[in-house]
Image (cartoon, rainbow, N blue to C red; front, side):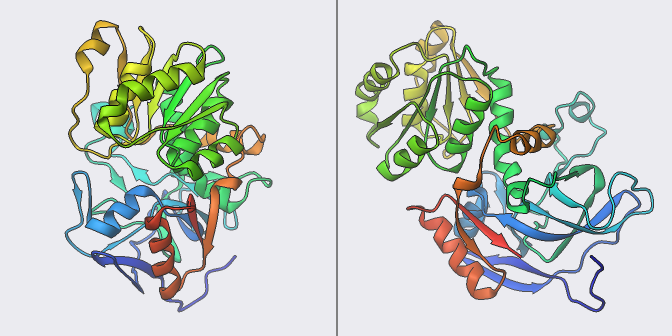
Length: 355
């Protein structure tokens, strides 16, 4: 697909709280190891909603206009002079973070923790809700014919779950508890199953989310309360519904209550994986959990996950298509409605743009 001459590259710029505007976006020049990608599918992430609603996500603060978005896939329009792995017309999924490749963390393979990471749509780095973006070729992964561009964009949230399941060593001997049936809780459910987990229980405060989790293959679902006083009652109900020891818990929410529940429900010698980071500081019963040798595992994004994600999609071991509940085009009105839809929660899981 040749580039249309004279076409202005447009992008969705976050200008203030709940203020997005489609405006021109001038791309950096194409380096020898870069590719230019026409973005075709982009999903809205929880972090995009934080930026949209509050102009910040944890310690990442939006201080100047920024192009939003990072879960994306598209078609190669141009390749740098040194790029051998990709060619014009290839369909690719983009890994959104560019690490420095030189620090000790990068060199040891834990590049997701690089302090100089430049990550699409994480301030101050512009994101990818745009007609086109320039990106390193080695962070663009070719999609097989039977994997759609929308599924390619879903590799990003799926990567979070793959990284978490790897860190927690999920296997056919791991019974899993998942706190929260939002988009990340649901991809964690699909991924834990693909990793072989025989029994998976998921809980949430919303019955609609739990019915979706059930349809995606959760063995058990438990409706929990939002009240911190109910932790012990919820733990008993979770243990009873599971019917066996919980080896690994994934907290895909990140509140005092969810973390307290996960720590108390997990068996002695088990693991609690903290994926959701709703609160910057938490109060949770770590001492009794530590006395039972329950390991707490932190998760930050992902590393080296795209090839596996694509393979899980290609082979049908994971089907992310049911998670895409809403679709929008790329117009001013549609981006406004799409972000309000995603921010509203309700029956929206993954809101996807088709550009």
